[in-house]
Image (cartoon, rainbow, N blue to C red):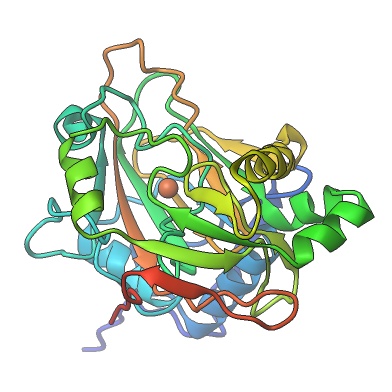
Length: 315
Ligand SMILES: [Fe+2]
């Protein structure tokens, strides 16, 4: 008797993933791929190329579990522990960060529907922020609770040339909470951040190691100050740069359904949960994994520096 394993298609019979761009600068919905089954190397290559091109990829109707999410994530690099400050990861899956609004009050000292209400690139307080992030939805509200992403290459390109030249030479300090922390003073989170601070100095413009694109690598969620400028000058400069990073022209908005999945190039994007359901009684549960990142490099080749904390590596 011949046993055919329908879950491992050969490279030449698997259908190539189809990418349907959904906004002018960023984002594509992917179809013709089943994440509940192992992927062929050709499918993985296509998804990696699509990720670099569209920067965030969206999938629907992918009922995968924690182990399958971790296995999928590994196609994009070593998977890290859930988060430098997370102590809620499921015991068997220390890579999984539960983005669960039912825990926020205990964790952050604030009641909210989304993990943070500031535009941010994940964990840029690390000297090597994650290269890629994967987010899978389990419980989503009937309305709202979307996530938006912005294209940091488009934001850089959108600056007038004199500002691009200025930004090329700037360095900035990133720390949890940025200039205006979203977590409450004295909360569990605040205590953890104060006890073991993570602070890094990154180039304001980083060069993408794969695409070579210049990226405007500052966000309100983490960027605290521009190095070498007074507080007033730094605030004015950051306001100018954040304004470009968060320009709606460069963004895409994703409506979650149960069993949706988004994967983004965390080097080339920032994201935000718009907090449009904070006034409603809703539950929202998503599961995140992150891929070990490289140390960013500026236009002049100067790498980022850890001011406090170590590199965050995966396996
Ligand atoms: Fe995030």
